[in-house]
Length: 122
Image (tube, rainbow, N blue to C red; front, side, top):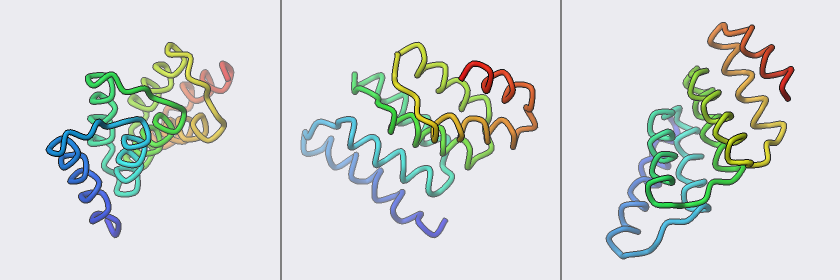
């Protein structure tokens, strides 16, 4: 990944925040998850999403959009749909970009019927 350095720097900064006892917030996680998306590090993006729950950090549309986009980059349709379901359950407002990424992940995974179901629900 050309932006791999950015991805590694973001994770390093998160560790430094812990060492300096600086609390991570939604904006911090959004930036870190977005850097994972740039590199196709979908597993790391999902791990950071898990951390937000562990640390009771609120997730917003941008958090989900970055994670779903990372899943799209990694051609991972199931986690994309899981995240979309979490948004719905958590009553996080969905935007067109987030839904488009989830639909594209379904397409890449040859899950046309799931994409069609999602489209009907939207």
